[in-house]
Length: 67
Image 1 (cartoon, rainbow, N blue to C red):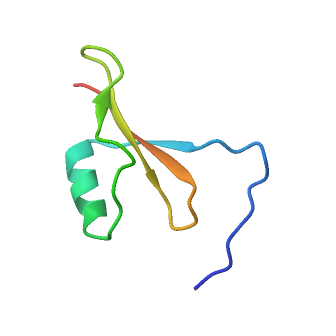
Image 2: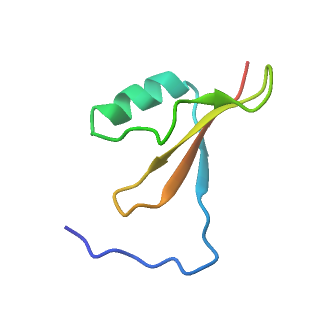
């Protein structure tokens, strides 16, 4: 177990681009990590995204771009 870290007040979240959002979420589910809400499209034909939290509770945005 590690000590929690403090990133200060300027932190909102980080964003990570993934090739396959569904496969990424399936892999994370195997480690007990679930999305805050189901994935959604930003707009028709746009990126799909969702948010998860790391073990310290920080938000991570997962993005899958079309094509």
